[in-house]
Amino acid sequence: MNAVSGRELKDLLYEQVARIARAAASPKRLELIEVLVQGEKSVDQLAADAELSVKLTSAHLKELRQARLVESRREGRHMFYRLVDQHVADFWVMLRTLAEERLLELQAATREMAEGPGELAPMAGPELLEQARRGDLIVLDVRPGMEYANAHLPYARSIPISELRNRLGELPSDRPVVAYCRGPYCLMASEAVEILAAHGFQATRFEDGVAEWRYHGLPLATVSNEDKENAT
Image (cartoon, rainbow, N blue to C red; front, side, top):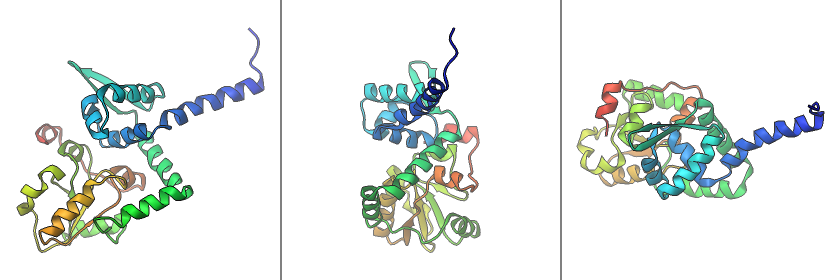
C-alpha cells in the first residue's frame, strides 16, 4: 500500500471537518439542534416543533447522526434523538454568534425581533440570577414542561406558554416577571410578555436560553427523574 502523501492527508483532514459544516448547512437542521439543546425528543415531537413532516424530519436527523452530532434510541415504535454532548450545544451558540457578528441581514432581522413584542430585560445573566435569588423578580420558563425538567435557569418557575392564560393566578402581581424560552430566536417569551402585560403584569423577556446560559458558565437547575415523569 502506498503511503498517503502530505497533500492527501491534508485533504482528508479538511474533508472530515467539512462533514460538520455540511450537516449544519441547513436552516431546519440548525433549528432541530436548537430544539434538541432543550433535551431528548421523539421524531414526532421534533417534527411538530420544526413544523416539518415526520419523513423530512427523519431525513434531517439522519444527516445530523451521520456527522455524529446527535444520537438516537428506539422505544417501542418511537425513535428518540438527543445531542451527542454539550459541545454540540456550544457549537450552535458559537455559530449563531459568529453569524450575528458578520451578516448584516441577520443583524437587521435580530433588531426587528428585538423591537417586536416583549421588551428585553435590561440585565445580564448574573444580575438576573441574583435578583431571582433575592425574590426581587419572578423568572418564568414558558417552554414545555419536559424541557424545564431537563434543565432550567435557577429559581425559574415553569408555566408552559400553552397554559399561561389559565395559570396567571399563580404569579404574584407585585413583582416584575422575566420570561424566557429556548433562546434568542424563540418567540414563546415574546408571546408570554404580551399576555402578561395585557393582564397588568410588569413583564420583560430574557434573550438567553439554557444553551447560552451554560455557554457563559452560569449554573443550571434540574428536577428529579420522578418530577420529570409528572411534567407536562
